[in-house]
Length: 65
Image (cartoon, rainbow, N blue to C red; front, side, top):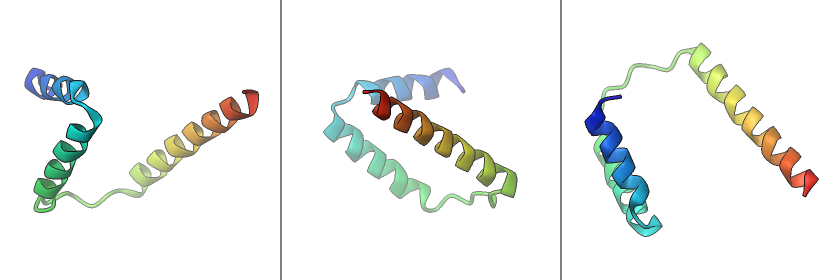
């Protein structure tokens, strides 16, 4: 990731939650017109696996508390 992009993300992280929501919404509005390539099955499977593993970790942490 370019240094400027990382700086933008760091600045975003320092914003209050209400401002983060507004900035995220504006970025999403701008992304609507992007021409993204179609997702590959491998990408979908990988993302689903990461999500389920994260949910498993959260569930395990919840059960331990």
